[in-house]
Length: 544
Image (cartoon, rainbow, N blue to C red; front, side, top):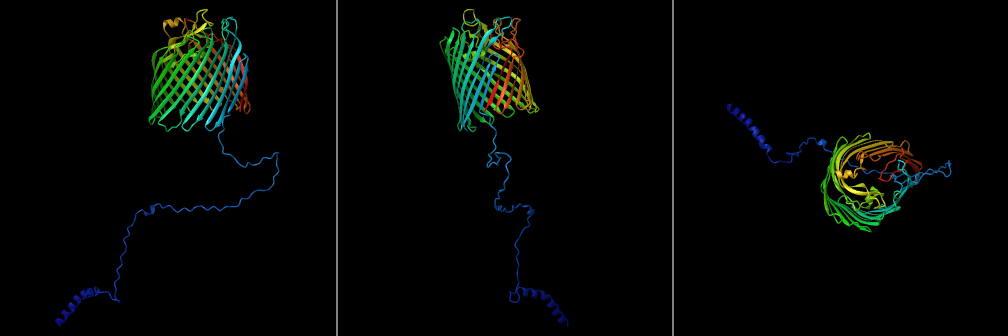
């Protein structure tokens, strides 16, 4: 019995091994094991945030048949207004190319001006200009002096042509001038005539991508002066050449060289020919707030005077954020006293001889400008100016000339202070005012000769422009200039109250009037030439 129990326990212990052996046997048709293997697929975080552009289908346009309104409608007027078949693109309105002004005044004042611009093509412009102005009447000297039956007419004509190439502009121009006038009553020279003309050719680069920019011009200037026995038929031929070349060295920085050369040739008088040069190397810097130019004028001259002059050419400007600009300058340079310059000083005075060029040794100034968005603008400034061989009026010896007045040169200097103010309200109202004070000085000999007698001491200008309605413009102004006191005496100041108005009668046609010296004062813009009393010029204007 014991042995039977032992066999039974052994059978239970061997049962798991038998089952294992059975599963390891080869597969049969009735007993087959299938093993399934699954591919590894990791889980991606934030997979839903990946942007996928949807497919865009091309829009489908279904054409529709055009239907026209063929119903009849009665015309309200003849001819009937019809719909335009084509409307051109809107473009900005261009200014009219032609302008003519013609007026006449109470002193036989003549005011004629005409200008026309031919737009030959998109790259070609031709401008023609003609003007004539002057007077013929009796001028009052005051102080019971006899009146002077004076006349002075000036005629000018000009032609100006510009062609724009791809990378430069070409400009060719010509000017002609004629001035007829008479001298003082006690002069025996009688009528005078100045004739001038010039031919101009200039080029300037327009391509911004060029590393070197330039502009250059040359001018042949002719002048003939009929002025007394010493200058009867005197001729001046002046060749003036200008050039400015500058290169960009970095953003906002450039260096350049400016050149001017004048060659003067005289005939029918004892003036000496000469050549004057001006070389100005400079450095320029701009960055939006700072604007700096640092240069120097080197000015040699040969012929009439062999001299070398040097003056500064410095400008410094700083723009503050609050619409204010602070600037400092120190400039100078040569101003030739050629026949054109002497005529601008006074055609009624005869030069005492060949005058040396006026040289501005320095003109140093400090100023500030500021404005507001409401139309206010103000400018305060002050400085010092030194002039060598400054032109002044002097007396000529009796019997040596047809004139009682001459032109000479002397060294002068002055301190000046000034202020400017303006207010602009849209295009309806504009007010401007300026005042400058100058304190002139010279050496003892110059004071004894009266060099400073005609120099301005205090200058005041005021002007008011009003545009109340579209066709009407009105302006009123006042100018006062007091002269420098010499030995306790002053020349009568300029005291001019003036006004004017323009009115458009029709599109392109208007009328105008100018009133001058409303206070009927006696004064002189040019010494030994009294101005007209109250005078009026009126006329018509045409724009086409």
